[in-house]
Length: 78
Image 1 (cartoon, rainbow, N blue to C red):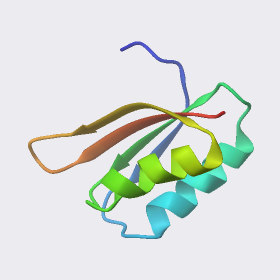
Image 2 (image 1 turned 90 degrees about the vertical axis):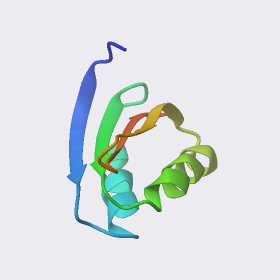
Image 3 (image 1 turned 180 degrees about the vertical axis):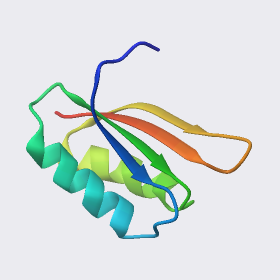
Image 4 (image 1 turned 90 degrees about the horizontal axis):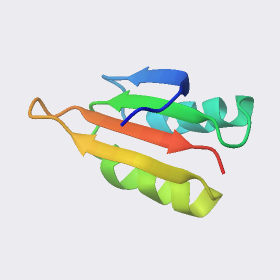
């Protein structure tokens, strides 16, 4: 998938609510249609980030978990 990422967030090692709070701050600073890429190790992001997107009207372009239990997301601002 080729996406122009505006902001990259490394939330590895952080736990709820920090990854969501960082994503929320990043989303506020970009324009509609721009993308935030998130890297995380907290398993709760696998349900927190999709819910955040649904609730706030953003588009979850990618959600994947690696074999090493890292989580990767692409969120497009609505």
